[in-house]
Length: 384
Ligand code: PHB
Image (cartoon, rainbow, N blue to C red; front, side, top):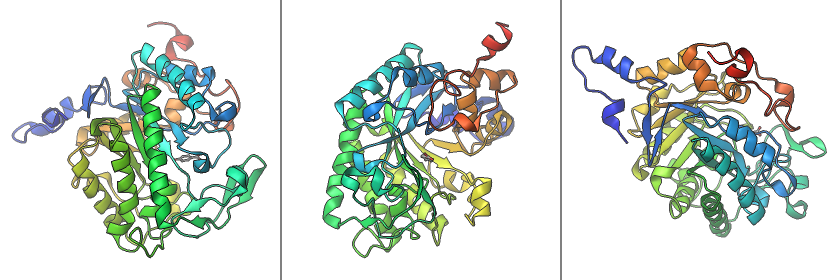
């Protein structure tokens, strides 16, 4: 990582110099990759995979259109059939899925883009109707989350999941490793481990969802154990400079809570520092999180604990993103909704051009409408 470039020396004029150097539009070395800007496409669930949870040509076109991002992170992609929690999300456990993703990465690479796959297991955020043989979803502890699962039959109340036995965790680590291997075969530039938003790994991290009494629950060190073992399984496949991880320390989505998020996530980020990963991707508190009692932890808290690349996410617009990069609190900013609605987002932000407004009606499921038909600036106003 070129820290000299992102952490210029102190001294007279250093602040001005830093502000000038640290532009959202300047390149950055991230692990083994060179990104041509610091604008990342965030993982976005779109529920448009084909039969067998296989990515289609339409999905390839959607990602191809957004190849101008410094890096694309794929939508969350289940590592196994039991990792599924939503209709028509893609997988990365079968040969067909791997071949489908290859078409996506080929399309992105042909445009000069780079793309990571996000490795996902939803844990308890599922429903028997979504699970193989109608089995119960699995989780660190048999604790039912409040709320409803998104099933093929519509929203249905969550059920009490089955607590994973200690001797089953090796099977899960294997699933992560095999999925990481498939991501490599599919031509991705790296992978992001989804350890956020109340899904399986986040369920292990926080004491609001982990009441285990074995080596994987109780103390913070124990709650970190499984997510870190998954990191290590993925590192058997990928070099650290091609692996990122996503965390949501302030998040309350999917009924999440923790009695001391500063301690839990401070320890997690500290533990991650020893692996030399490409980046740590931190979701900041959203308005809904603070409303639901989430502890708002400023990104600067993590920056002080982590010397590597920090990516942030959380309702950023262009000026706010430029500000956080210039401040040095983050190196990369990921954009979800804005990238969804603006395939040429970096160009629009650079020009301060108007942005297309995302249409929530077409976020989840459907076809090309609200997916591949958002216009570029050139399509709207012609070349300038
Ligand atoms: C969702 O499908 O609603 C979803 C998936 C992954 C996330 C967040 C939300 O990280």
